[in-house]
Amino acid sequence: MYDIDPMIWPKLLLLLAIVGASMYFFELGLRKWLKVEKKKFFSYNHINDKHKKVDWTIRIGFLVAILGGGTFNMTRDPMEWLWFLEPWFLLFVFIGVSESARALMEWKYAENRRAYMVTIIHLVFVLVLLLTVINTDFFWML
Image 1 (cartoon, rainbow, N blue to C red):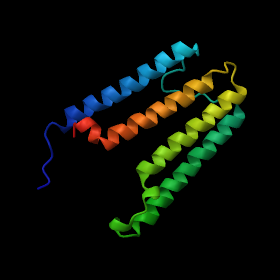
Image 2: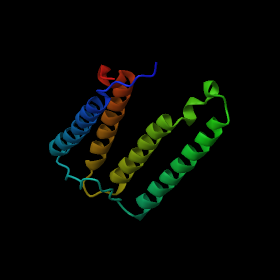
Image 3: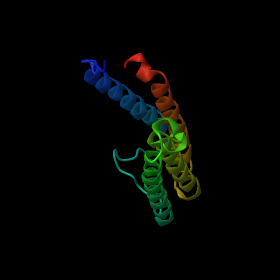
Image 4: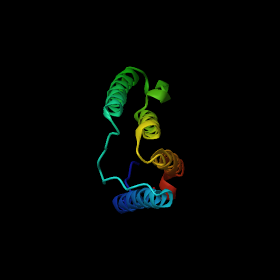
C-alpha cells in the first residue's frame, strides 16, 4: 500500500544535482554577462551594517513565523490547515523577501551598481525553477 520506490534515492540525487548545477551555472553566466564579480561559494556577505540588521530581522521573523505557523496548524485538523502557514510557502516568502532586501541594499550601497540586477534575475530564476520542479513532480521523476 505505501511502497517506496527503490530508485527514489538515485532519482532524488540526480534531481538535486541538476537543479543545483543549473542554478550555479545560470548565476555564473549572468555575472559574467553583466560584469559583476563572483561571490564566494556558501558565504553570505552583507553589504553594510544596515543590511546585516535587516537580514537578521528577516531571519528571526521567518523563524517566528515558521514556528508559530507550525504550532497553529498542528492544533487544527489536517484538512483545515492554512496554506499560508505551511513551511513550503513560508520558505518561498523567506527567499523572496531576503533576496529582495539584498537587491535593494546592492542597488543603494554596492560599488558595482549592476549587482542588484544579478540578484533579482537570479531570484526570479530560482523561484520559477523551484515552482516548476514542485508542480511537475520533480520533472516526472518521482
